[in-house]
Amino acid sequence: MKVKKIPMRSCCVTREKLPKQELVRVVRTPEGNIVVDVTGKTNGRGAYLKRDLAVFEKAEKTKALDKHLETEVPSSTYEELKNLIK
Image (cartoon, rainbow, N blue to C red):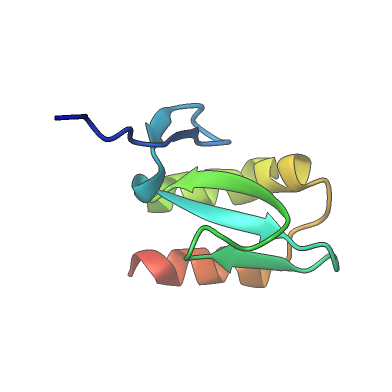
């Protein structure tokens, strides 16, 4: 029987390689909006974050998402990420 391949992605803050299901994707859409992508299929430039409150806070502090998405990420997006964990 064939073993199914598990897609791996890296967290843009911790640089850990983790299965895609353990990460949250944040996307800059072609229109320039920043959205949290729960489906993993939204069009645009994406960045992955580990599902951990400390990682979200570090991303906000270091502006890691701003660098990866090449635009300024609003604080409302970070609040949405934090509410996703709770």
